Length: 353
Image (cartoon, rainbow, N blue to C red; front, side):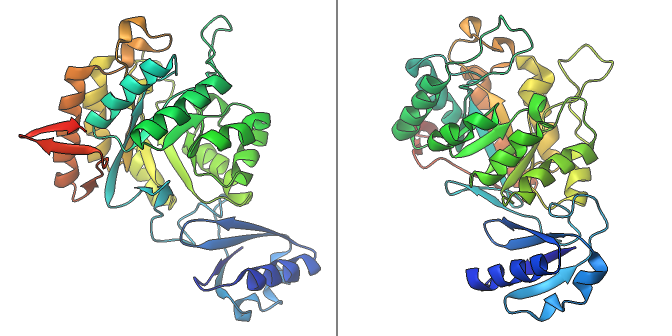
C-alpha cells in the first residue's frame, strides 16, 4: 500500500501520517521526488484500511499496489517522472546526453574529454573516480583526487557531474563532489549501497546488472526509493548472453518494457554494451528510437592511451556525427535535445565559447 500526498502537503501533515501508521504497528517509508512525496506502508493492510488514511490532511490518495516494487511502479504514478540533476531534466519530452571519460586520469584529460562531451550534445559529465574492475590488477581509479578533478572541471565547464560510488562507506564523500551518484552493474544488488544512496539526497543512476532480470532491476530501484529517494534514473547497459561479437548485448526491448512497468526515466549505455567505438552510434540511434530518455557514452581525447575502456571511447570525428544524429532523432521522436549553455553556433558551426 502507498500513500500519495498532495502537492501542498506540509512536513507536519506528512509526519502525522507516518506517526498514525506507526501507532498501528506498521512502518512508513517516505520517498521524495522533485514533484511528489510518496509514503510506502509495510504491515497489516487490513489494519491500515481501518485508519481512514485517505481523509487525513495532506493525503491525495491511498492505493493498494499489486507489484512487488511498489514505489517505482507505474500503478500509483501513471505519469512518467522527470528527474532533475542540478537543473538538467532527464525524462519524458527530452533526450539527455551524458558523456565523458570512463575513468578520470588527469585534470587535462578530463577537461579535454568534457569539451568533447559538450560537442557531442552532452549536458551532464560522466567520469569514474572509483573503478570496480574484473581484474584486481587493472586501473582502479584515482579515488578522492579523481572526485576533486571532476569538481574542478565542473567549475570550468558548468557541466554537472555523474560519477560512480562503489561502497556504502564512500557515499557521503562522493556526494560532496557529485551531482548524481551512479550505481554500476556489478553493484546493482549491493543492498547496503542501494540503501545508502537512497539516503544521500542525490539523484541516482542505477545500471542494470549484466545478469539481472527487469524485475530484479526494478526491485533494486525499490531499495533506493524505500530509503527516501525517488530521483532514480534507470540505465540499460547490456546483459550477458551467449553472443561474443559484442561486449554485452544491449537489450533495447528493456526500454519500452520498463517504461510500461515503472514511472522512472530510462537511458541506455551503448559504450559498455557494444564495447567498440564503431557500435556506439548505431546503438545510440536504436535506443533513442525505442524511446530511451537519454544516452551515456564514453569520450576520450586519446583513446589509444586510455587507462580504461579505450576501444569504446568516441573521438572527435565520431562526436560531431553523434551530435547531428541525436538532434535529428530527438526531433523525429517529438522530443527536445538539451543543449549546454556554453555551446554557441558560430558561422554555422557549434563551438565551445
